[in-house]
Image (cartoon, rainbow over all chains, first blue to last red; front, side, top):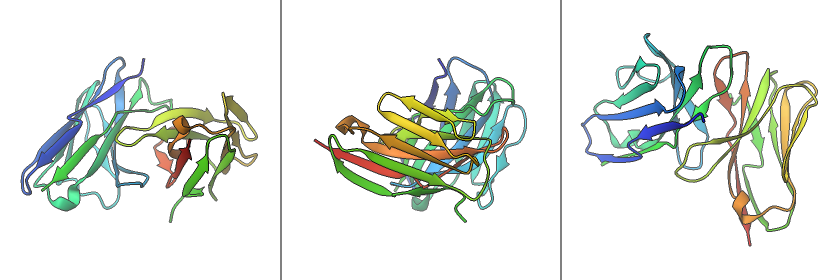
Length: 117
Length: 110
């Protein structure tokens, strides 16, 4: 149980285009999902917290207009990288917290490798 | 300022050796988690420690949470090539977000 999927696993796009990444909780409902960014051989940096039915909370330094997050249902959150540039190339990972807010457990997706050319 | 410091950052050892990875902070956490991540994949939760002084064992892996709940260690006995990966500690305060350490990259050679 507690499986989180991401789609696509890899994407290559041209500079200036937008890319949407999906994060799905397959066997549980997630009121909260998190989006992380990870550079090679580095740790995970939290970008934003996504709550179902409300606006996402962005970490300091993360541009909300560039990284659009939509948590439209209890099993799906999307991250759209708008007007992507080469510096946006990175490994994007989502995680999902099941059920009610009184738990610290998070389950991570397999990640999406974004390359902007 | 990095809230969680991990050491060492990189460790290369031979199969059969023992090793310890440390995760230290000046902050108190309600719980602390250890993850292992392989290249191109998401982190996989290994253990959650909650009580100060707690020790948990997972086969050849031993996890300890400091008495003051500010630090933790991961000890691997008789490391195997399959243990290779990035080990991440993450602190939890209340039911809020995770704060990750920088990670320890472990390479176990046959």
